[in-house]
Image 1 (cartoon, rainbow, N blue to C red):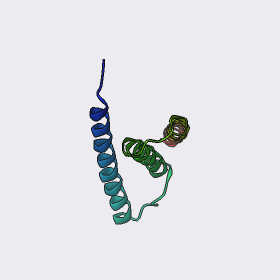
Image 2: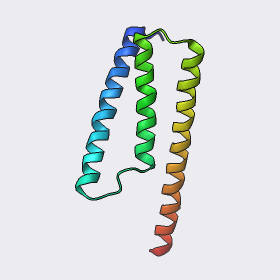
Image 3: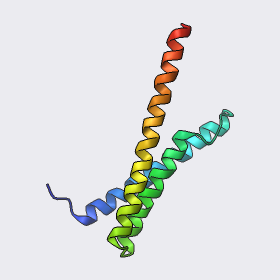
Image 4: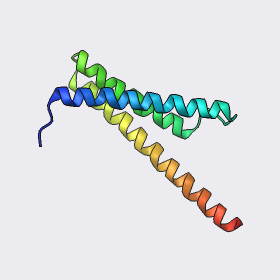
Length: 101
């Protein structure tokens, strides 16, 4: 299956826009309900947004392949790590909720 570079670049624009809108909605909700603003999920969203914006920048500026691989690969690994930590915290919370019930 082949995806044209312009299709992939346009998809990145859509992903970045949706992520920014989602982040604004979550931040607004947290501020309205006096919930702690910065947590692991917001950190994960920022990492994914930076990775996406860096990839978009690569469409306008010819960045060295090695640098792009290191930055996007590193950010992807960090994002994966945050996903694992969030899932583990949810698992621990579920176990403690079941013990209380």
